[in-house]
Length: 433
Image (spheres, rainbow, N blue to C red):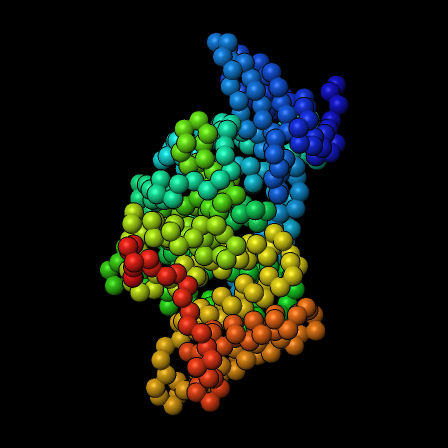
């Protein structure tokens, strides 16, 4: 009887090491092929990866890319805001590998040269803990930013040509954004689908990084006010919003250049059918290399959805989900939670609060101003938050002034001190809104 492999390093050892390929993977290789080499290749945050070279039955050789995930912790959550439960799940390998196989398969059908061809997913025969795998073509890549024009054109083709099998938003199977399970249940309403997705990530982030009452209240305002304000109009007044297949996690670490063709290539998808603009949400994060030129080039291929004037706020709203994913994947990163969530959450609330004229609305504005002041006070004076320099404190004050300038009544703000917000500046020779 064959010996069971009992650790991740026995399944796939450290980078550069050869290993014996499990029978579960060998069984899904082309009939009559012979494994020439299996060696660990590069690194991944949540999985182990390898390159496999085989000799096919006709004598030619072919290379495959193998990704494996042992049974390990993933995160699930309910999507009800009032339900504070989130839980670890232990089906991580199966959900992650099947989800990536299904995601890449759907994308490959639409853009075979843009997405490596998936071949199989399954389970190792001899591994403890239980280990699942995903197998696709090996592509020799240059990990540089691909050409902006070609990349955005290929991405837009997928968004335009994809058709949801149900006509709704969601996906056929659950998949993972990092190690976070996305349930992807079908929903005819994009606002409803996105709300459930955003709330489930928020609850996991709170479970990992801890409670923060002022921030929780601001997020509740996002769900109850901002999401309906920005997403309901997409399917109102006779407008039809097409569910488009999105990659789901499209940043520079999941895009490269195919060295054989010079063309862009993407991988590590967590796809589902969404509003196409959702794809751009991760580009809005400050640390992402996709920037203004990519936004403008994408809009050349697909104009913003109506209402056009809400385009930038929608992208900022979508970016919240990617910020939450970052905070779940890298908990406790200094200053990051405050920088991302206080700025973006409060800023979105500010953007979506209408102009106040009546005494009743002025009173509501004062309540919302007090909420923002509470967030600001919590951030600046919370003993659990360490500001190492006065520069950080001044920076927080500036952020507060910027995001609150349209909410605070005159006696609580000084407009002259608030610098203008210019989130995405349209270049003179490119499309502007």
